[in-house]
Structure formats: C-alpha cells, structure tokens
Image 1 (tube, rainbow, N blue to C red):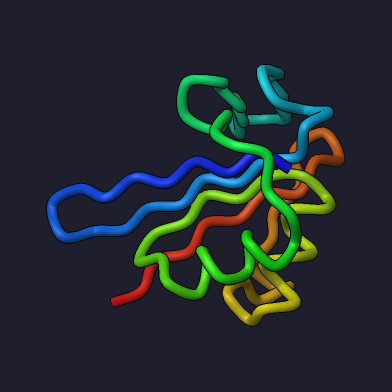
Image 2 (cartoon, rainbow, N blue to C red; image 1 turned 180 degrees about the horizontal axis):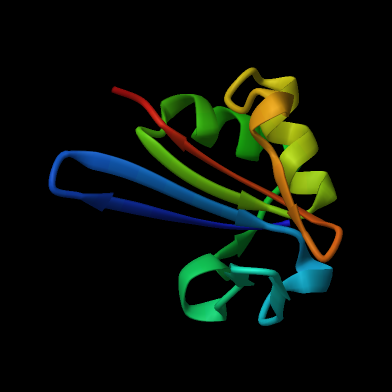
Length: 96
C-alpha cells in the first residue's frame, strides 16, 4: 500500500491506496474515482502503520481492497459506507 500524510490547517489527512491501482481512473455512472499519484502515492506502508495513521487522522481517503480492509479492521471505516466503482472499493472518513 501507499500512504501519504498531510498536516494542514489543523487537519491530519491520510490518503491510502493499493499499489496495483495507483494512477488509474475508474468510472461508473456518475461516479469517478481518480487515484492520482500526486495525492495518494506516498511511502510504502504496512498494515499496522496504516491503521495507526488512520486512527490519528481527522480525514481519510482510502481505495483498494487491502487498504479498505485495514481501515475496516481498525474501525475507521464502516463496511456499510464503502462504495464500489468498477469493482474498486473506496471510502472516506471525517472525524467531527
């Protein structure tokens, strides 16, 4: 997985994406998922690193089966809130 962290304006944003789909674009109906390397491609990350970052994040964007599994396992993403675009799972999280 790739993970990129942003610390801006009091928000800690985490973007996580499976390596095999980075840089690709998926579309289905009105939904478009563009996994731009500039936003998602950070450092290589292991499950535990991703889970720790997601638990600290105030905002997260997560795409791909492995990345979504980590987010669900640590309780940051509810499985009912995952959308699929051309079979690719994607979810966002915002802590209020």
